[in-house]
Amino acid sequence: MKKALVISGIVSMVLIIFNIIVTFHLCGGRDYGVCMDVVFDIVIVLFPIIPLFIFSLVTYLMKESVFQAWWRFARVWILASMLAILVSPSNSHNWMFPIEKGTVAFSHLYFL
Image 1: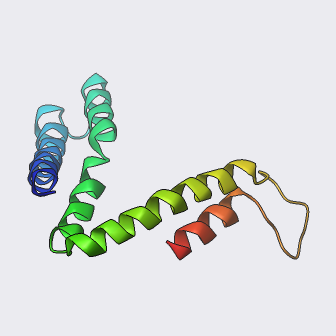
Image 2: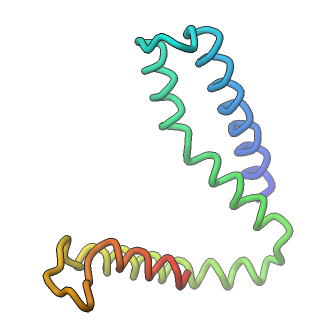
Image 3: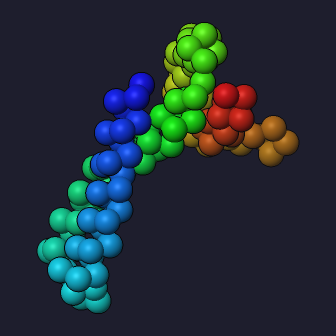
């Protein structure tokens, strides 16, 4: 867990600094071109590192028993959420109780 915290923290800082320096100094800052496309692609690919860092920071001081209990719950809940979102319709014609992918995803996120 400590390795994930350190590695994701370093990559997050490098990503943020790289984005600021390359975008505004090396790419010109105002003109949109190939350099901006490359920076955007790199940032999008590495973006999940930042939430990983925040998650690692939150769980770093957590007791191992609490983390394991949460992990056992999250594995089942995430699978159930994905299955519920998959089988829910994209559009609903019910004006009173619209059940669609967005409301199902939000309700499952709310309970997690």
